[in-house]
Image (cartoon, rainbow, N blue to C red):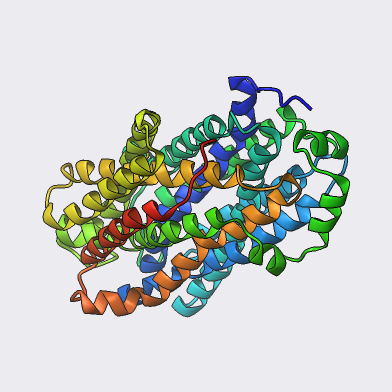
Length: 436
């Protein structure tokens, strides 16, 4: 079967729902440490709250991938999981930021918040994975890099919006401070609006994208019936044992990359509150102002990612482009410890965005060209463990490392930078194909 090309707008529609999902993910990434610190969590325990999101990703995404590989129904193959994940995410986004407004004790409020965080990340993972799979399903090898670049663009645009919401709501006059233990209205309204955009974007992709039927899919991916039956009988462990080399080689780079960004999400708020606003009091206006500024900085990172994504195709050697991106990101992290002006931090986060751009586009484009179509979803779900496992390990070690660097949260961003430098070295161990 001739593998037809998709138009730009077909690839755009394929990933447009990712824009809404990423708004939800950005709100979670930028505000979870702020939310739990406001509820009363100790800074040395903050990283433990970040274990749940990647843990749920490790459980949910391989299952969604495996189940959706075998799902063929009137609503599609991947889309049913997209709809369920989005609906649950919308419901949870209405509850999570209200954890401190229900009259609960500090312990009960944090327990409620943890349950909501677990459900939110489960649902976001469930909604996010189908977009990666549908590109692998519906786009030919020649266009995959372009399709994932479009997905990366929409991902960063969603991040930009989600990160800026609390700052924008504060700017238009919505309160950014609240009684002790209560989340400010600027954060609560951000989650409400993000939930509304999420469901609208997902419904748009659902209405504009038609998935292939089983026969068309098999022909498109050159899957023989005997091969498909053999792969369907393999469980996740067997598939993992027979994974292509690229799976493990890219996974090593992923490990050091995601350790770095877990520490960014966990410690940026406390780090810049200490170095820029000179406070560690979570109830103070300065700490909450730092929380809003985190959203601005993460938005700057998203802008840096968009700009760098345009530069990446200019590298003739893929591995050099990947490694340079991670080195620039590492320099951005290390520089945060030397800066005491909130606006100069823009330079740091623009550089961090270079590393993020490479992490979003390159691993999946490289991997999907090495995979069989019949197990595409299962392998992409398993590959998500190379994103989740390093975050769990980093979260478990976060409190210990924070003590080793003297309890200064900004120094955890230096640790993140060193991790990205190691990831850049690991890039040169990837064995790539000419099809890249």
